[in-house]
Length: 180
Image (cartoon, rainbow, N blue to C red; front, side, top):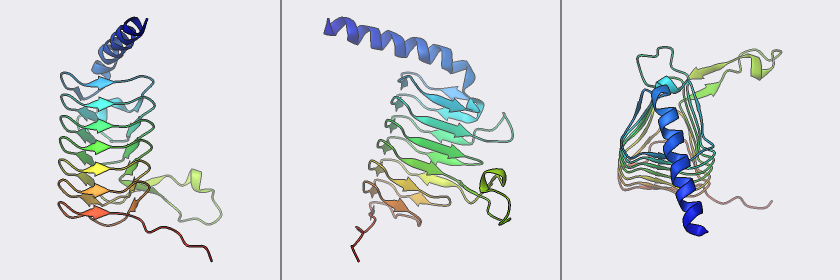
């Protein structure tokens, strides 16, 4: 029974990838995307070879042109469950990056210019490109804010909020909260 379930999951992933491939800017050979998966403005998403994207991941490209990808995911990258990647202009993920479950990565912020108008109606604006260099690892629940570069083979601890660049081979962690 287990062999049959494993075979069914493999066939489902294959059929899903075949259905999804023409909607993306590129889908590399051997990439495995586990449904359910949401890709908004999929023509702006470039996925390399051997990439694994787990279930419930949500990738949003808001690029103004279908000719340019605003999200690039390099070969051999792993993206965990419920990960959320959003790009107005540029999120660049190099090869062999490991992104844990429930990670958020975005190059934009909400506009808050009018105190009377609800924020939901004020739109978003580009704040700076996000770059994840090869071999870096983002732990579960991490948040990478706009304009940040995570260095080669750097580690971002679980639940960390990254507001500044992390150097190659560096580590970023958010200090634990204290009770007052």
